[in-house]
Image (cartoon, rainbow, N blue to C red; front, top):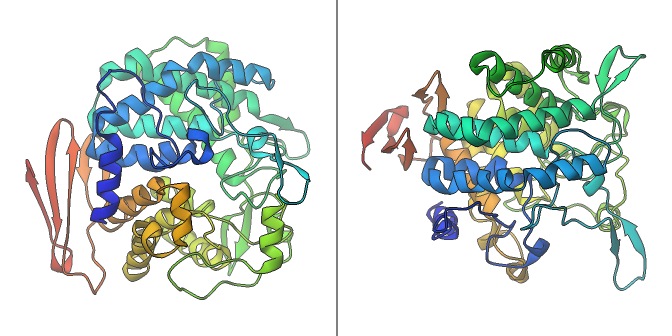
Length: 433
């Protein structure tokens, strides 16, 4: 964990000197992999770490999104949407950096890459990080000068993405891709529908609470109607209704359960590997990385314990964790369920990703900084149970049986705190750690 935190803090050194927005490439400055683009994991993992450890850097990351809000508007317009749509892979000019087609090697075959077109949740992810920043810092001035505009323009995009289904008598999303990159062209990705609806509700809450920024009354009325009528797919598992990853997921052939809890990715078999490498759609319930579990880690209070537990034990054995982003959310949710040993294992797998669990050759593609941030989230948001409620810090501390204690520091409302969890879950918080 110390190695992971060191790499994250080192990546941020000097980033805020110029007082401008900062892009955080997927692998930091350790590689040119992904051509230096930034993805949604920046907001859902790295930015969350920096909100609590380097708030100025977190603000600079959000400033990057604000600085290129006009590019996000143009990107939305180019795809038939309103508002601001942030790209799936955003470069240092704020424009889409992802490929539409990929040329395979050694076979000279052109394959379509669908994420550029079908990943629609990034603007909502940006708003999630912004809302977390506001909660942790209480920076009302920043929200009034920049934050509100990001949220309202993102809500406008979200509202324009939904279409009305007469059959379902609800608003739906067609042909999208959620965090699980093994499945695309899906209708009603639970994660995507939920995040876009949440974004609209966030904008509505700001307008109602602050009366700023001004939004036409007719638009507000449309947002309320839409937010109350978004379709979300559910499925029954062991008598419990849990989120269905996307509409029709439960009807797919089941996959071989991945019950081997070895440390490292639970690698797919040869046939599955070929399907993934050819960018083909999977026709089974195999999940590449945290999807529903990611959503539950972001909004743990939105789902009951029985729903979270049933979903965790349904989806995790069907998840191969082929993305390093997968471990952190699983750690957080496992902790919330009281499964502290499982949480600790996921924390270890995330924090040591480049050290143990991939071939040394993978270092040529750089460090998995969002995996490291996910490990920190597993510790702090998971085991420590860190949350902000009505402007106050709250914790639900617990430790796995083989841990004696854990310690971390964080910033809250301008104060640096040192937090310790001791045996039996005893919590000690000191100022100025």
